[in-house]
Each structure stands twice: as C-alpha cells, then as structure tokens.
Length: 118
Image (cartoon, rainbow, N blue to C red; front, side):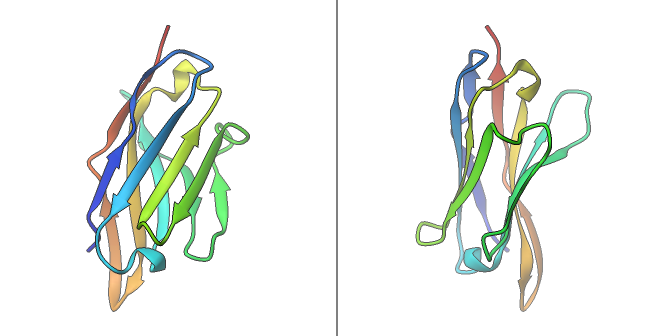
C-alpha cells in the first residue's frame, strides 16, 4: 500500500489560485497512476485529473485550462495547480494512487478542504 498525505487546501477568493500537494510513502510511487478527486457537499466524488506513470494527463472538462496536474517521482509527490478558481470548485480534494506492483493497489489520502468564496 501507498500512504498519501495531502496539503495546500484553504480559503481563496474567486479567481484566485491554490496548489495542492500529495506526498506518498513507499517505493512504488513511480509505478502508480496518480489521481485527484473531489467531493462537494451532497454530491458524488468526481475525478478531476489524472497523471499516469508514463506521464499521460487527463482532466475533467470542468477544470480544463484552469488546473494543472504534475508529478515529481524523485520527491514522491503529485501536485494540482488550481488557477481561476470558482465557487463551484469548493470541495474536499482527495489524492489517489492506483496501479499494480506485485498486486493491485488503490490508496487514498485523507482529503484537504478547498473553499472558494468572497
């Protein structure tokens, strides 16, 4: 299993920016597809962005052009740069690591709150 710890959430005004970080323990980080999900109150958890072990990136349509996912395998860390934030981006953001190393793994962080409000 991979242990994940998110940081970087907080309160920001509309139009502002935040950068989320997710630090992973263990030696299998480079083998994992790393995902950012979010869950707003009363809504289902949704996939926001993905970066595979090979560097392929995908975004939800709602964040394309505003959010950027990246990873630093040397630091075992994945980032989510969020620009032009909107009130509808308010949610708990979760980091997820998924892949296969000897066996399938699917690990989650504890989540970090992002609130976009004036």
